[in-house]
View (spheres, rainbow, N blue to C red):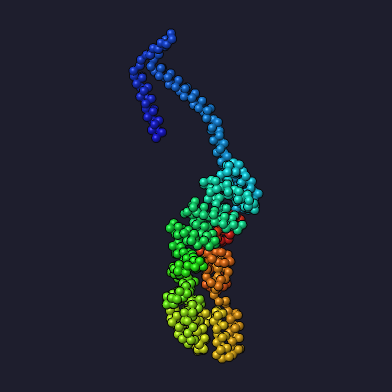
Length: 464
């Protein structure tokens, strides 16, 4: 475009010069007694020269006027360049664990750039690296006054509050962070984990619903979390005396968590307490088809209503028919047969249970075999063999936390040891480590904003 403009201007000059050459003339100027006579071409050249001189003079004056502003702009650009260089070197120093270098670069960055979000974040992380929690808290708090840095400041303050055990402050900061960035997955996870730890189940349910609408977690996981929350809400509502709502919540939780028997057990117990034994029986039968469990067998025995031992065997055969190949069905039938002194039936069912896991016989099955040998043959030596085998056998399954490995007698949404949400699974203790069974929700303490030496080492180890 500029070339075209130059060509057009040159063409205009050529045409003008040719016109003046083709039509020469004279010009007479009289002014204050002065008379000037010249040709048209000379006059035009003089005017052009005068205009050029005026333009150069004005350009020089404008340059002198703009010189201070240009100096200040260049100075600001240089300070920004040096400040960004200090930020980069500070990040590298933090990653390397060099607290002294990081502190110097953080001070230099703040002096050159002022209290910008990045400079304050670097200063806060440097303070944390040196163990100066008060200094880090001050820097994070300063970030709250900056629109662009508020979220970073809140994340740092949440981490600090969790480290000192101030769950209420961490919850307030997490709520503010979630309101500020509702689409941020980390903000949702931090708020949700803190709400569940505080057992604020209704607030956690609302937070989960909002996150599910924004697709911050898979639909299947959202359904599982909702079922766990409803189960805890059922417990809380029953403690308040509203058994009808507790039953409704337990039923909804059971529909969302068919693989976990705790809601079904709870629903059956509430129905039995209301005298509704037939619906309770249907609940146990449905749950047994999905996941046979000793707690369901105990409820089924209660539903039997203290019938004679022989009738109880037939009662358990009805339950076992809903999942005849399950080991738990064989164990339940064996216990009923032992109580009825049907030694052959008991031995047959226990044999089926042992055949299901010949190399790792459950401890409970070994103890039942020992009881059978004592009761049927009165053989202490044979019974002792089974007792010894029970001691060497793996422990019976229990609810074990995937994060800390803590054992629980009954399923709950929270681990009582580490307060992790939805990490309990029915399995043999010690059969899996926390690393192989990661929790579905991360802990509320956020990861560092900047890489640390430990984090880099872990990343390198993972890459190998």
